[in-house]
Image (tube, rainbow, N blue to C red; front, side, top):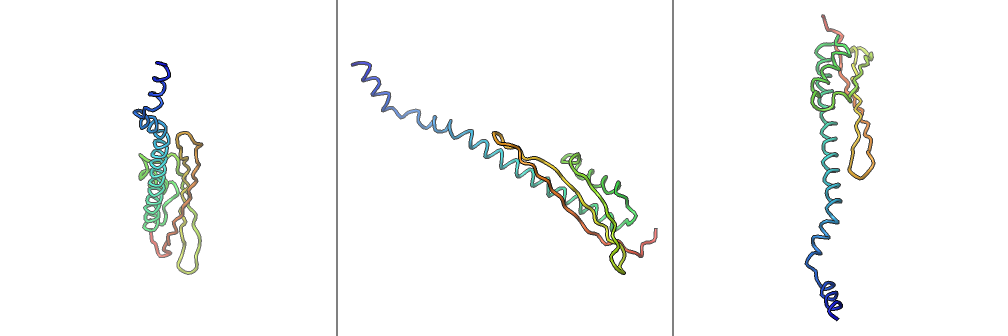
Length: 139
């Protein structure tokens, strides 16, 4: 009889229910928070790649004889602490009518978003900048 009364009291006790619920929800909330932070960091990196590519495009419009190596160096300098190992830059010069050339600078950035407990999600980001290059440039 003593054991059954003790079991009944144990079944009615609700003292640790909140702690158990918290322990069950904590891993899910932590993974969700880390996923949001990782996604935000990826968006920041993508924005930084775009910004550095725009700087390279401005350099190309001021220095029409700039090479792909110079533009890559500009982008990598901007992204030195961020993502410079994961970015590749290319330059294509196109003739566009009587106004001269247009330089198309393209950057490709590859990254994977890793959320704890889930598979990594690869992100391939490609962005281009078109810059007019004057035919009246005199070196």
